[in-house]
Image (cartoon, rainbow, N blue to C red):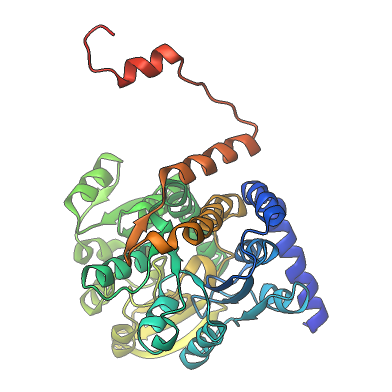
Length: 414
């Protein structure tokens, strides 16, 4: 595709997303009018696609200098990356299919701007700042972290006293995880799976590793599409939830024996390893909806295989030494972005509204915050929820003064 055609395609995708993100639009109107980020430098590492572009442009239009890279080598929409550079003047360093060296080179180019704030997804930028780019630490005032995996890593850093600036846990905002993690991941995982394989889901044995909010969303959609769903968990409370939600629950070593499709969504490593792969039946399809490409052990899969070949754009066939065939989607990376287009715009509208508001909150509060991981303030969650209802034309009830007094009172009969 010629460069101008790629730019036009990217612009269309960005403007389509913008038209379906009304909550962020309302926030953007105020931020742009007030130029609240004037003079700031913001480094971003997020999945470089249309919805991310709308967030990055919002911050740029509100006065900041912005640089963007991807947080995953396979999640970039090249048309969007080129359009951001050529049409919107937003420096973007991302290309689909980057090798590890080029991926980190892009992250470093973003950090070369010497940012005041960082917006991260998986904490790669933040880790670089704390390891190989320590010379920039004194300038960084704070960061936002988008996803479960990144928050887990950053909380570990904070507990060990290694974190050097405050970080907002955008992932743990209600208006993020209840909708983005559950409904976004659920739908986009199905989109990615179907785009990659063109296979039916109904009637299949569908195994899901992890019953956090992402796993719940995937399970909900898989069940709704007619699959027989089994959950594998290490958390006893989540395992009970899965059982009471109507799903089979069992250890991975047992679940894989009849699996037609297996999706991992845990945020942990080595969820599916050699013993699991040996127990799988011929033709099992493996996919990952966690952040990094280490949930399904590609090292173990390669050791077991006598051959590997690409059979569809996002499908690799591994023929094991016993003749069994296993299929890995999107090289074990995020199937919903590497093989699909990510979460729906209406879902990311809420998550990225939280991102923009948290950046504003950080800039207002950073000098008073210690280096730690902070929850998103309740009033920001409430604002985004109310804007979502408003833009959807939905009205809700209000408590009367008497009801407000009643729920606050501890006296009998009041």
